[in-house]
Image (cartoon, rainbow, N blue to C red; front, side):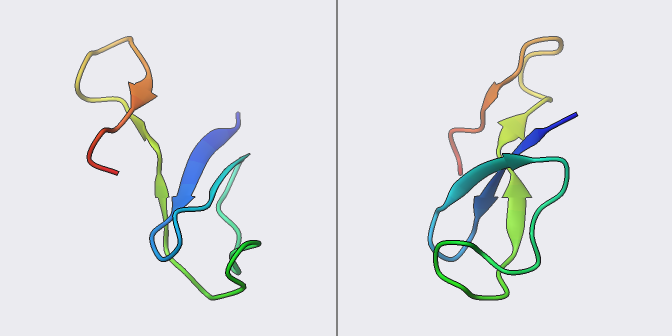
Length: 51
């Protein structure tokens, strides 16, 4: 199952099963966070507004 990932350095978004080791946009070894918040509304997937 694909997830939505966001680079914490440049904000690049991508959908994949796992985050890449190197960001395709800024070419850095960045940290990627899961861009979907599963805790705000159980059963409803939506982007986390804090990200």
